[in-house]
Length: 435
Ligand code: UDX
Image (cartoon, rainbow, N blue to C red; front, side):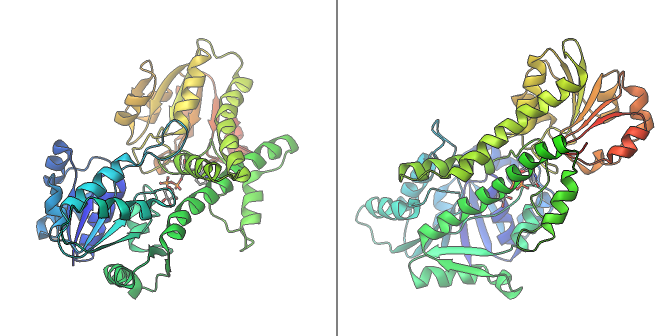
């Protein structure tokens, strides 16, 4: 089968590379010439474990191609995925102008039957609107087509695994032909008994928001509970583990921390709230989760200040900057808000991250100093903050760290170390929801 993918952002690129890995002929298109030139020489615009290898392999095999010409991606393809960005507008709603522009262009290049699929997270009703838009832009030419929704559930850092072994595949479409074609495309997953949810477009579009909002709620739930744990002298990790052992609750997404970030949860929660409001409904649980998340970031700054006293003239080493490990993505990373707050109080920041220094430089205040090594970042600092739980930060040499720090303050915002051991080692250790 031949497919086209429009947009070589995170979702488009992972989707294209993984389908090529399944043996599908994939043409990815993006209007950014530099990006396409880089991709054609095997260079990726972001870091994702395992992706470079499958891109390179399938480029060589000729199963994966990159172009700036949309017609090359649409012409030979039976399925065309739209995977361009849907950035949030000021009111939190999703900006659909890129998706709509692409749909019009696809219409102009449409010959023969094709299934046009939205992969980007789009507000409920978008699929139906695109159908109209494409029909209007056919300009009298022959061209039968169907529109479908096939939301992605890819976690950054584990995207390949999530694509190859997903919990489910959701397909929303009206026409049996479109459903059959998409099922055929996903046949390798069908063979490993992946559950398929086949539904209408509106339901498929809503599933994505509902899923991400629920996960965001779970995180805010445990973060809020961590505040009570701290007051009562309880241990949030044990609470989370024990409640998670109830299969109705499940153990995942119950790690207390500095708040959720990334390209999905903040954007999708705001978008579903705005979509619901437009339809006269207040999604109070999701609204509160967003609020709790904002508070959580503020509370991390307060925790540091309460322990260390006035921060004017003090230096903090911040280890880990990306919104989570195994990515260089700084979008809505809690590090941004927390570092700005600490600097606002007069602190100096010495930062280290294994992958995201280049992207951090674009979004953090210019006074932040960067280091290529966690120990160098810690040298002479009054305290250390673990912001992101990269594996390499889970086994720091504590004796060495203690000697390098001017004062032994240690703020473990991801609860990766044992409080008793850290205190024994000589640190003034603080974590989240554990006394
Ligand atoms: C998410 C969804 O998981 C994925 O299915 C969706 O399609 C895209 O959005 P991603 O944003 O890559 O993926 O990261 P995820 O692993 O879900 O983490 C999101 C944020 O929540 C991170 O900032 C992470 O640190 C935080 N988090 C996650 C917690 O604070 N505690 C947890 O228990 C889990």
